[in-house]
Image (cartoon, rainbow, N blue to C red; front, side):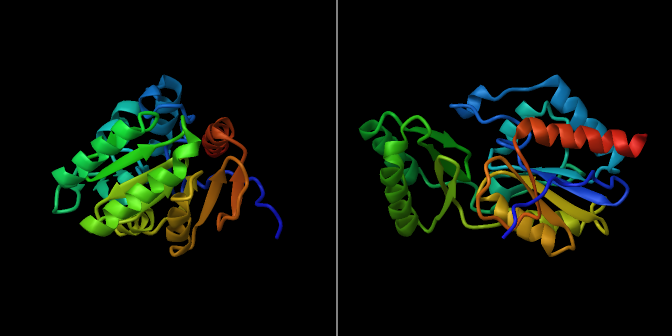
Length: 248
């Protein structure tokens, strides 16, 4: 199978843009908190949102507050925690009725980190992420712990790039695309989903269901994305070029 080619410029009059954050719009850092605001990136996304008539959503594994911190609150439409939490363009926040992961699971995570201090945990309320980027040797231990906790507590395991996440059952990135596409200003447009991680395959699939496609960012791997970009810089350059092409 041929490798995906570079994507053509976005048709801003007809497209709806869905973009992951880490590894797509922002570089991946050793610790999640090391990623911060960037004025040039935020300005580009704001101009794209205007050119798309508001049909731009960030679909990230991060929590909603963290997305807002990094993007300086410039983007209204956000699906956080891999689609589990969603904020509409009108500002309504939709999330699981259970609210948060139960205390005993948090206690188990704290105990696991005491045994494996090289791991770090990120608590998103409806999910807890174990990061093993600083200690790849602990991947199997982290995943084994996550699956045991999930089986005992009715949770779902979400694998990602050097992370494993325990989350409440609920919406995925594909579900987030579907929900946005049923609402203005996304309704009737052609979705383009841009992402780098395994979890973004759900987003690619969601875009395809509405006649759109995926764009994978970063190292090549088996994917359903139709197009590809080399890295974050290439993704931002493509978005900027799409804006310039449309606006002449």
